[in-house]
Length: 393
Ligand code: FAS
Ligand code: PHB
Image (cartoon, rainbow, N blue to C red):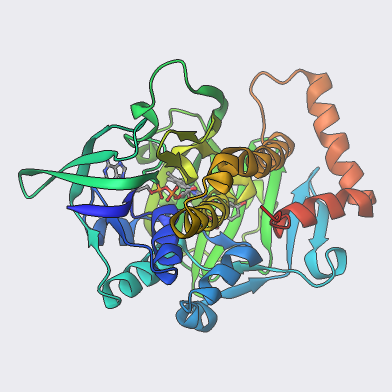
């Protein structure tokens, strides 16, 4: 089998790229290790920047999103036993907002459209190896239905996430990796309960908490836990009681509890691999970088990467010029590092660090107090939260 572009992974990066290339008449195949049901049920991100919503609209895939999404105009940050920083996006960013629409819903919409287009997407097709990356005819080896297959390509897009095979296929000595593992994790739940008014973060002596949402009837809440925490150690009651405490809702008058139907621990980590390219292999999304979930940026950064990659691939297939492809990694990494910085800042601001000295704890609380009293400080958070402008690559 041959394709102009072989895309490894049917997550947001791979699926957005497939649609962008299809729109330009570029032949691509998506190879996904898991089943369709598995990838569509995977609960992850929930906050979409305007740029990501615009991408769904450009692709003509935003109908359900428009019907079912929620619009968030602000976040609240609670700290110091009763203080609250309110960051109002439209006031600070000339009208910008963020959109709440679960990553699994984005994936469902993108997969359904890909299949409706009759475009090639192979599920339960696990890529086992990449060859000839430094030539002009790289190949992808994959296993599907108990049979080994080979796909020859002009270009390979490694959109296979942090644990994929693309990044490891790059020879030793080529990549520089930057890794920062935070000393805690996030215990996340989905519950059948209405969310509180605002997307609300808390820096409490017991630890970080976040009250988010997926719809007017579904809440997404998180608690900071130990990095190696087992979700089984947290009964529903234990989770709710701790959330009330950390959100300064001890009388339980604000946060409404409900049936918890998903519970899991996510590591909090920042990781960058540079360059995001080797020969005919281009990395995008989590295959190249991980940002701490605090900034709600992972999915949005993946979408930004593939916008740049699709534009470069379109130039390549139309003119045979590799100029944009040669700039791909540098262009993406400029945005990646700014998003890593912002996500690191929000993580450092909002979590309790086990090894913090009293001095460091007071500096952290002073930062929150500064935001409480500084419009400029709140503007910094707002302009990053809604999404930095896409550079003209
Ligand atoms: P993905 O990991 O989504 O997709 C990669 C795909 O490649 C997967 O479907 C995988 O099955 C497939 N694959 C892997 N190896 C393969 C192989 N050998 N062959 C074929 N296919 C292969 N981000 C936020 O912004 N907010 C959040 O709250 C948030 N929560 C998260 C919670 C969890 C548990 C995790 C793991 C991540 C979370 N993220 C969050 C980040 C997440 O949203 C990612 O940034 C986003 O999924 C990135 O998309 P992709 O780069 O497409 O990678
Ligand atoms: C989420 O709803 O998953 C979410 C919201 C805000 C964040 C992180 C995650 O900062």
